[in-house]
Image 1 (cartoon, one colour):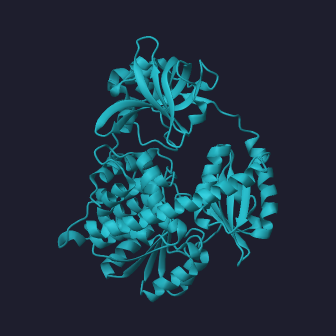
Image 2 (tube, rainbow, N blue to C red):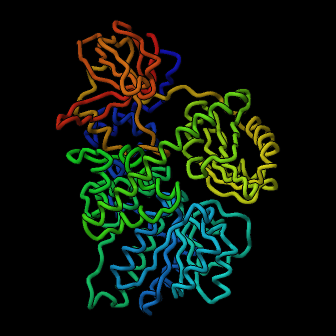
Image 3 (cartoon, one colour):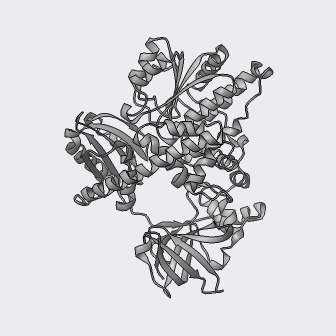
Length: 571
């Protein structure tokens, strides 16, 4: 097999066991075993996720305290401030808590972060909730590091519940009434990968149970928290949270809820995004169509249109907010492309650096995260992109990384140079005095050079080598049941050797490659698409080894098997 593939080892006896007990294809069994799912009971649960598979949040530090205070606020009729960060996780978390509080008779007062106010929950936000008469405030997808603003509320006698999943800085006591964060060192809950919106789902479900036990629903309808799963799926997938354990259950079930489009905002947004509504929605729709549009208002200025969309009461209201999100997304694209080309130019001027660190005055802070991600994709190395503000002399930046370098830990090693920073292993944000950027660059080069030097370049990992003739609708459908795919649940990759290219052409803007591949043994043919592989067109008649993922493609109502190409090399 071509040197660019590496076949993962699996136990043949374990494969036979899953095949005989679950009745699945041997290729599907190999894919599952390669992910450590080798017991029939666990494999059955993996292929058929249910809410009952979720572990109760026992041992999650701060959780019971948060539930009790939230229920007290509802029973007292308190005005509950609900503050979400401006990304998709923050906005969906705010929408989830507002929906829940309204359904149980609470009084939520929503607000989302503004780009001009900086990262997270700030003093202006705290003052706004005081003016609104709130006696309790929830900070969602932020708050762990926002100690001064939360302390100002505490001093006024206002309780704060922080629901967040960013790294917890070393601090003995947090001023919040309750800090719910799976990364707290005293948290014993076995899964630390929940996004903020997933934590909010657990909080809402537990609060509903406590209110039910108190007889709260004797005179009012009890909400069905399953209706919140669409928000959980969108926030979890868009935030690149690991799609394993609890997250995979929540995301898989949430995609089904999203498909039902019970929320008026989804139909309006999906139509503007050009999503075909006669096929199953998947993680790709969230990552490339839904997520960017919900993110766009907050990236440029104010995330309120995204929150208003998710809370829209009717299709007319939803259509107006969806249009605002769409217009913001178009503006974001234009700004992002200009910034990316300038950042790439600066990066190529320092091509020998193991980590890219670029900064310019005038870049928009709202697109630096996307630009950093695109630089990682293009250059194959970690990237830090910083937007400088001439009026303050500070820059706000974002870091995205590759395997082998933890973004949060890399910035933590430079904390003496930073005004503030926060995030997690894959992505982090920072504020830095622009005069410190050269020193920051050199410090990150030292850190990355040490850590990345220990990482061996990887080849494409392949779950099974198969003839193209075995790739049919039934196999593709089984593999689809392993979705949603992403961090923590990588997409299955198969390989075929000596496939003949019957036709090939570059599509889109020329960056993608459309192929028709033929199996040499039986003449089976499959359409294939290689994203960003246009320059690697092997030409008609070439014989190639190909690594691919089989998927079910829908086009104009027609369903067929298509191959998504990951690697292509001469046989």
